[in-house]
Image (spheres, rainbow, N blue to C red):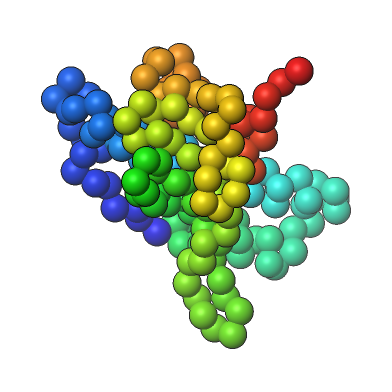
Length: 162
């Protein structure tokens, strides 16, 4: 499956306004979360086969084959634009009663459209704004959020550390 690349994603940052850069960075952030999930899913399949003396079930082999040939219906992340925030929503592929379509799951994070500040969600409609988790304008924060080894599709990196 190929994800369409928006025009804004290929423009150099210096040619974009801050609002456009934030949109571009959030798009890349979504792709990073998808890559993290893909790696997680692949590891889960291969670790399970190791527990059973290297024997992989037909289902697991089919899943691995689909990932290798690009036809796997893995979790996706999409952006939804609100008045103040870009909401990042995870989507699962729904096969119930032959629906075969992506359905919204939960909110992964909120990003302020004007500042690039990243918040964990408080609910479907609003972020937990007491603490900024990351700021996309800060290069080191942006590099972390664009690194699939740092992000976590389940959002654990958005929680404050004690």
